[in-house]
Image 1: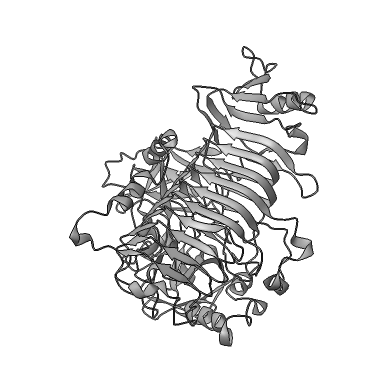
Image 2: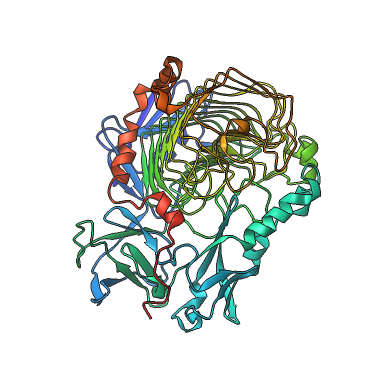
Length: 640
């Protein structure tokens, strides 16, 4: 066994007494990894590793002969990878409104800011501000609204629409006749490809619903000094490299000239960069902390939207990015203050193990698996295309991860995977405070038949899902799963969302032969939502031959065990028996349910990871519910 040692300022030979740099360690590994007879351990000493560019590992850095190259913390130390840059030297800009300002280097770009370790909100209007109304191309300013054209930088405004399953931000392209018109490229992403329709949706109802939803969407406006009205908000004027901040006064935060704000200009900390023809293999990353990276609020996350739209999948640039990896293990790491997906796998992957990690304060998904190289074609509806056959994620274990406070910049799921996934075990995870689903896969690639297979959700615990205040979501979601062998069992689901029209468990289009048993669904909707028949502990849509038995729920929507009748006729092939509708007023849950409640979630060995995330988030963070439901902000334009 070979050991190599690294330190943040190392320039030695890699021994215990003379640690080296990351780059030197990579060179040393390449000298000995071609014919391995034991694992290679690369130990990172504690301290802060400030990165200005990604640390890249390629297939040349793979383990061989079944042995691993393990990049891990030296025992009893805590190495931290960060892209943090600090802003200080504040001065008062407007004493009456308590707005401060500071300078940053010219040509700097960032869209996220933390002050005293707390993520702050870029100046915005809140949802559905008075004086504005939704339009097909953007937002119309009413006569009672402000004259935005007179604002300092109206060209920097961002318009966001939130509806159904979608969260769509776009830059303002121009202002015409008091209308903020978003960029044409963003407007095109509002639409649904016509080739996604016509097979199962009668009368292209998805297109119709999408169009109606966009016209009735919640709207918000962001990124103007004139919107800087609430404590904890900030605005960055790029033209003069000046940031403005309105400090908190209610939380005993003593903001002064020496206070520190943090931003980042680094997107990816570590990149494992394989290719389809030459994957990177046998790598473990263990015991590291990743914090403060740069992402954009525009566009979409790597793992969503999960339904077909004309939105383009972004380049795979996330905090820990793995492209085409086989036998990759990511374990015992902490991800916090992340503005992209925290951990993302792309292209393909086999034998992927994501175990015992903590995720908190994540702008998009905590864990995502999504291919940017698949052929998107309506033929996917009929089966796997030959050109896609070798692009699956196969053999994935996601276990004992703690996930809290994700999806801050979009409404994506906390854990999301594409329909090109087989043999996935998702077990003993604890997921809480997320905008929509705790876990879901997609059907964006129209892969409705013979794709997703052998999926198991077991012994997970979810709470406070659905904080985006939307409907037709759930805690645990699965779709396009046609093969036998999938199951959802022994999960504890506490709540389905802020609105009634959500579910605990949701089997969406073409999900067949799934066994659902021994789940405890509590605090479920007690009535249906705004859409007829939608909401309860279980939803089924175009899914058949599923077995649902021996579950416990306190939902009074007992009819929701049939498919939503507002869209599809119920399938009589789904079998229901021995499900228990529990009434809380009668006393405690039955013994069998209480045993599941006690055991679900993190296993004892991994419960320490929860403290690393909770200690970060229990320090003045804005509740996710407020970010997605705030409507009481004053009329825009107060800081003219």
